[in-house]
Image (tube, rainbow, N blue to C red):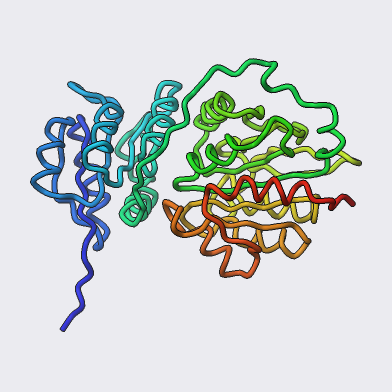
Length: 358
């Protein structure tokens, strides 16, 4: 008797008939996915969710009668489920997508601006992969950080921080679910925390808005990395979408190199690129942290950091949205400690403040 795998039931929500057709055709190519229905707006979607009980929703941002963000808030309050957002690459679209991830969306797909048919076809494998990973994601109630205005005086770096922390660097990587996980980690850092470099898999145009959002929530300063930026205590640099970021060393100082090159481990920016550079240039003065995400990017780089004496930490399965990246890193033997998300920030700070200067 043939063993039949349970298919992932998907409901496609978009006000565009063309997009509903394209997304349905793309997802229908995978034998593990079943399109159980489509909806033209959130009101239509609400009825079909009740009738069809889908496993995953693809959700447009801009729709008539109710926008996707408002619907997502209501959905997560009443019937939490995995949602993959479809967003446009605009300033407004970036901000809305960041908010969607904060509310509870698992991931997002950037709509092509021109030649929608061919553009969506090029995204075929990405769309299928993200929907399949979303189906296995853990959807949890989120405790949202209350945003408050942060003034320059709040983020002053004490002079002794330059002495105690200049040579310490915390490198962080993540993907699916990583935007909110990184926020939780960085929001726990004090103003004099060691310098941070981070790669989260996001497309070009989204990382600047994301870094600005982090900066508003954190006591440390956060910005999108630019070539030549120094890694300083009380500061975090977020790799720009579509560009790799490497850590480099000049005398006693650390900085970053931002550059364009082919994807590594299927990604640009790549966590492996960052972690391998930390292994080479920072060695045992570094702390490596790998957060929730799909795929294996960062596993080889974390092993390299571990072999050079860095402390390495992976997020545990229970607190991950998707356990893929931490699981792969753990499998290499390159992880020292496996911790739930709330314990990662204090442990990373503790490890970075040990006397390991060379």
